[in-house]
Length: 285
Image (cartoon, rainbow, N blue to C red):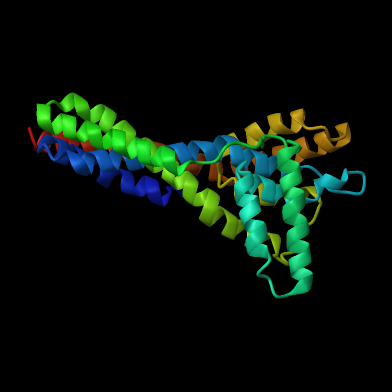
């Protein structure tokens, strides 16, 4: 069975609509679609190349008694889910103080403060602290895009569509980053920090199945996580065991056909988007 994501299923309709709008000189929908697609592509690339490999690497490494204290999975996972934004963890700590259960409150605050320490010390492979989004940057980008819109309207030139689209796409990207840093991210972190969900069994088969499921049939994040494991300061036998778990997950995806169906689904979605754009162009000739 071919696996196609919900966003990929909407791509043919979006590309066809964008071509129809452009052919009729209706540019605002085109700008909105291009800016939205750029933001989604940016987020997808960041998830697949940075955050998901870091999470897979952290889960693949064993957590037995020989592991250092920072190797407890919960704080490491919180540091990764913060996406390198210290403000998200700080805000999550504030939300954690609203927990009425003292036991859950203590555990939540301890996990979040440990995650913040791991982030600032760059202990988690693949995760470094980074600056958050600025509301001033959003305002400046929107103003620049608005100026481009006014200039393009006054001159009647279509070349102004390029800086206008870039400006709106950048503003939307920064705005979504700010939303995650100050709203969605802290709420997610606070909820995960106080969770009673038991960890997965620390045996190779159970971890490999978990890794295969979380990778959603994509082999790229599994392969990138191997490089993160190599750069970690864990014991050599831990790295060997983590690589074995990742290899088991990769074999599981290949043998059950999930990796092939995911690749086929991506190719089908891309072909459908191109066909939709071509059909829309031909119909409006």
